[in-house]
Amino acid sequence: MLDGKETDIMMNAATLRELLADAIQRLSDLSKSPRLDAEVLMAAALEQSRSYLLAWPERLPEPEQVARFTAWLERRLLGEPVAYLLGYREFWSLELEVTPDTLIPRPETELLVELALERLSVARSLNIVDLGTGSGAIAMALASERPKACCIATDASPAALVVAQRNAQRLNLTNIAFREGDWCAPLVGERFDLIAANPPYIAAADSHWAMGGLCFEPRAALVAGVDGLDALRKIIAQVPDYLKADGWLVLEHGYDQGESVPALMQEQGFVEVSDHRDAAGWPRTTCGRWPG
Ligand code: GLN
Image 1 (cartoon, helix red, strand yellow):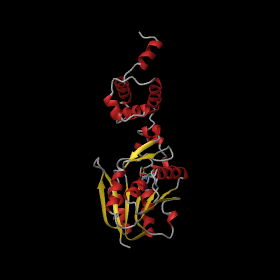
Image 2 (image 1 turned 120 degrees about the vertical axis):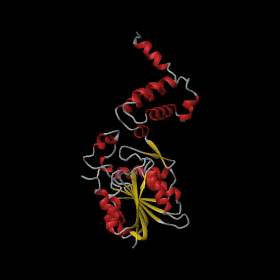
Image 3 (image 1 turned 90 degrees about the horizontal axis):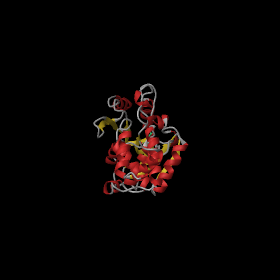
Image 4 (image 1 turned 45 degrees about the vertical axis):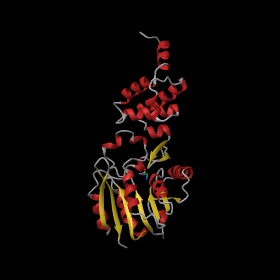
């Protein structure tokens, strides 16, 4: 039997390998990626890269580093997402600040960025909109890849816009303007070459809502009415007044909305409507051209 003191000594004397193995085991019931979570938190606690952990598995971290890691681990075990613990998340190779006022950018949204970039010429100076920008993920990715473009990022949440503006400043992206308001409301009287959005698309009764870390994220960024299509319907109805002839609408949607969203766009009068699958194989993003 170990008394408290001996346990403390053992904890302080644990190697990176031992601390990580213990954390991975404790996280395995809760997280889909227990090793990644543990490594990312440990690397941040040590202010080192993840490769450092692999290079020095026998290192004994300082007690303050262990304390920081343990505090994050306990919060992670209560379901809090890693991105909120650290305050940032990487998207399109850009490090973005995220807070509980913003959705955590998802890897599947990089598909939307790819599809939008395919429709945005490098040579021309184009006008782009990201509706419901949240942390600014889509706007930042497009503005950094198309420095000649003028990008407008809207959000109904002033708190999210503050985070998005800080991200643009830190990344030195001067070609993004931020406007507060619901979907196209802040765009009255203007027309654009491309409008992108990753709106809320989860149905209110969907059990996914209670799963994983979703309950830590802003509900308004995730849930959209009984069938999850409320926001998508509004955007599809509004956008024709804001697109130039031959302008594009690129919309992310739920895994089970790969038929309904293209159908809504066709009914509205969009042409060349196509739906695209994400890396996990789920229908995820619809594109359509407004004939004008
Ligand atoms: N556009 C942001 C993102 O893709 C926020 C989306 C949202 O809050 N629904 O991460």
